[in-house]
Structures are given as structure tokens and as C-alpha cells.
Image (cartoon, rainbow, N blue to C red):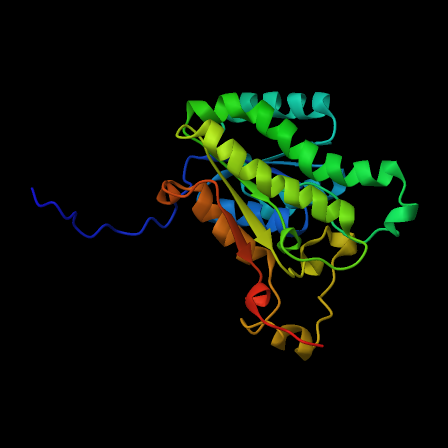
Length: 266
């Protein structure tokens, strides 16, 4: 037998038969990831605070028992525990977890006037939620050599003014990623994706859906030539959740159209 393996065909459905939990999966980037997983042959269990958005996903996808929705508040351990139990009961296995839930808009008041409750809303929604979901999904993920993908942000590396809670939460999520990857390897791989500007207007629930209002300048400032879309994040998430990414763990991959590498002077 030759040492060099022969050419292998590319798997058109790399997640076939696999079950992926996606928090905050009913709108925006989360929905983009869910649709990418379905397109790759997988099944999705989506959890979201917005019941209308979750039901709209099931109505619009029409994929039968390959998609399941249940309300989920990732900041409450009882909600997370119940959701994971129901997901395992529904699908009899879990192969992946995408920690995507959390407040979307990063802007807050001046730090000197910021209420503690507002700080905690970001930390609990993004960071504590990822901890709780990982905690309660790990037993099932370990049983099937699963993977976790945390949705961080390019704001881990750079900031705008008055975004301290969001940046702190996403920075903690990036650190949690490599710590958990070391603890859980080789049974479970853990990676993060840090999106840049992703236009999600068209990926909202039907009553809030609209075409993105983007200028030529918005697109042109990106070395890639355009603003990102949820599908861009979904495509990478599918790869990281699949067996083809078996040698990738503990990484935080920036997907920002090259903006983080572009030198800018004002």
C-alpha cells in the first residue's frame, strides 16, 4: 500500500446524520448558520428567546423532522438544562453546539453611567450563556466526538467607543474557546468565529425583515469588496463542525472581509 493516500472525493453533505444545537438560531447570523447546516445534510435544534422567529424558521424551511425549535434563555441554567435534555430526547444524540446567542447591538451608555444590570446583560447573554450551554451539552458531545463553535466578534481585537460590555463578553468567549479546547481535546474540538460587519436585515423574522441599506462605500471599504452575509459565517461553521476540520481546535478565526488587516488613517 502506498504511503501517500489516493485522491478522496469531496463530501457534498459533510454533516449528514449529525445534530447541531444553535443558540440564537432563529434570526441573523444564527439563522444563517442553521440554514448552512441544513444545506450540509445536518439536523438543527435551534433555541431562541423569540418564539415567533423560531416558528417562522420551521414554517419557511419545510424540512420536516430535521429542524426543531424550542424557546431558550441562555442566561438561565434551568432553561439551558431543559433545552438540552429535550434536544437529546428529540434527536437521540448531539454532534455540535454553536454558541451564538446574546445581545446583538454593542453600543451602550458612557461607562461612568452604565448600570450594573446592563453590564451583566451582555456578560450573561454571551459569556455565561456559552458556559451554561457548553456545560449541559458536553456529555452528549463527548459521546459522539462532537464540536463547539463559539461566535465571538472582530471586536475582540478592536473597538468603537462605548462598547465595553460587548467587547468584554466577546473577549471572554474567545478565551473560553482555547481553554475549553485544551480541556476537552481530543474528545471535543472547540473553535470560535469572529465576524466583522455582517448585514442581517434580510435574515430577521418576517415582520421585521427588510433589504439591507448599504452604500457603495460600505462595500468598497472592505478588501473583499462587500459587506458580509450570514451565509459567510454559516459556511465556515459547517467546516468547523464537520470531520474535515479534525485538526483544527482552539482557534479564533476572523471573518471580516479583510478589514482587520487594512491599515487606515483618518
